[in-house]
Length: 192
Image (cartoon, rainbow, N blue to C red; front, side, top):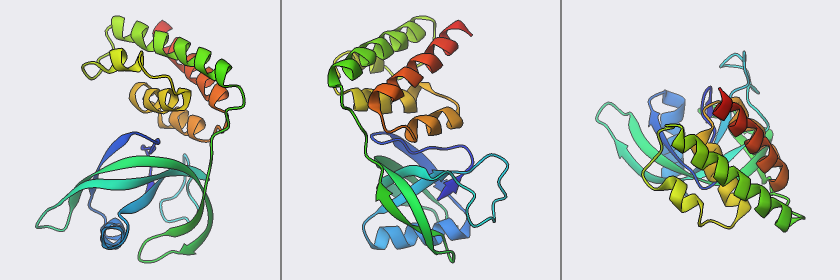
């Protein structure tokens, strides 16, 4: 599924309203099988009908809940599972399908990534203190997380509002570099 303003980050939940016929067909296909489908961010200025109008890295997700309406539309919650790299299109109609491979994270220096994660959590707390509206106890729960990749994913989904920033983080394999980018984006927001 190619969307103009949404990125599916691992470990995040993405609510979707399915109304276009091609995506209705995709959802039916997915629900009849493994309940999985991918989200790709549409490239800026791309024509919706172009065969490849999306970034090469996206997210694969699991349909956690889905409610269909009488008019054929559906509301669902998609849970991000992993980053994937899109390959060759294997199908264009009735919906696009592409070959995918996992896009794994790289964390050769865990101590560095953990230290950067502490800084990211501090910046999130600072934004919350500045009045950034957040879900109830999110900042408190972030303080107890130790997995830097999980921290990066949660903060990317929760704190970054710009899909192109989220996409940049999706395409970064290095967890430490993801943290550095998050720090830069969060500092810019804190001073805005």
